[in-house]
Image (cartoon, rainbow, N blue to C red):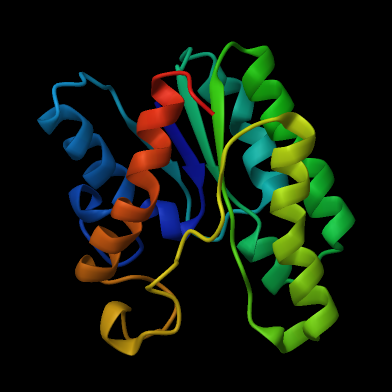
Length: 181
């Protein structure tokens, strides 16, 4: 199982074993599901950057590719159509390599206008629907915007926030590993 993402996936500011991918893997193991997890989260990564390293990751033959990307693209004002095209390519290449794919949805503040933010959030649903892959609607549900659950930067979840993110993602990962949608 590979988690492909940005600083949110990497667990920015925390030890690697406290990032939500590690917590999800620990939960799977505690329920008797053996799993090898690779956290391929890179701080600052974009969909374009992830595409550049995707083949190497897929050479590892993961059963599941969890894709949590797009936030940095949006924060840089990239066109939603470009972000969407990159996510579609990542999902398709993951599936072509034999992996199930789980998409992690994101939302962004309205810095670039409410239309951009709305279109960005809707993009994840379009990709998931078009490619028939499961979607976690909002990775940071219950964490985003809550000061007590984030580091001082107000963006990245702290340890408690990471546990909530892991609980958001865990049931989707479990269903994806079992082959259910």
